Image (cartoon, rainbow, N blue to C red; front, top):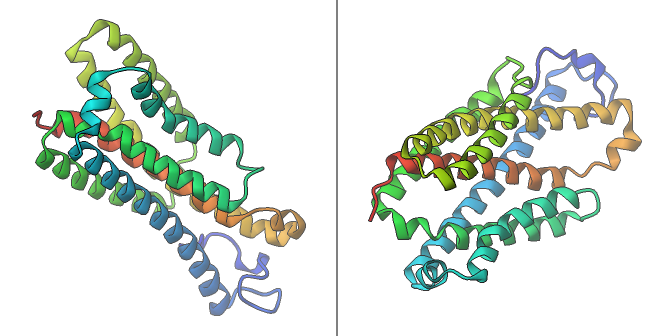
Amino acid sequence: MANWNDNPRTRTGFGTTTGMTGDVTGRTTFDAGLRKHMLSIYNYMASGVLLTGIVALLFAQSGLAATLFQGGGILSWIVMLAPLGFVIAMGAGYNKFSKTTLQGLFWAFATVMGLSLSTIFLVYTGESIAATFFATAGAFAGLSLWGYTTKKDISAWGSFLIMGVIGLIIASIINIFLGSGTLELAISFLGVLIFAGLTAYDTQRLKNDYLAVQQMMVTNPGAAQAVSTGKMVVMGALTLYLDFINMFLFLLRFMGSRE
């Protein structure tokens, strides 16, 4: 939704041919552009999650997942760590890569992520995985909608939530050696809360990033032309994808029934 607190008379080029964009046509065109941008992000993100789920299910049902991961070896570690490599590559190469390259990396990431997540089908029942997925989807939709529509500025959440993610990683590494069930439950509970917060925070940030680019079109058109909204869509989808998957995995530890 458009930020109605902004003075519409300061904007130009949002669907009108004059410098005065305070009319209904200008506001409607701008609002439609924002909705289209966010829907593109959600479509990419949902398609990525769907691709991951299909790959994970087929890889597990084929028996290859059991052979690869239960047998151990260097290949299993490569598959598990490959998604992280794709994320790092996309972030580091954002300015150099074309939109097409980023799209290809996103689909490759979603595929490799499916191979990595196929292990959940070896641990949990299909029914509990499906139930957890739909619970996560409902929570994600509500949190993202709130982040999109709220007038409250939640940008201050960012640094706190990132610190929380770092804390989760450290605690998880420590618990590998401790093997504490209580600590694992605490990590899972905090993980759900942190990625729930990140879902709302990232949604608002992606919306504000688009608004900033549109404002740049007025104040600095030359710089705005160098910004690719197509690349913004792909990276935005990656961000929300990671929020969804992580919230799903932490919630699965509570709702999942083991085989």
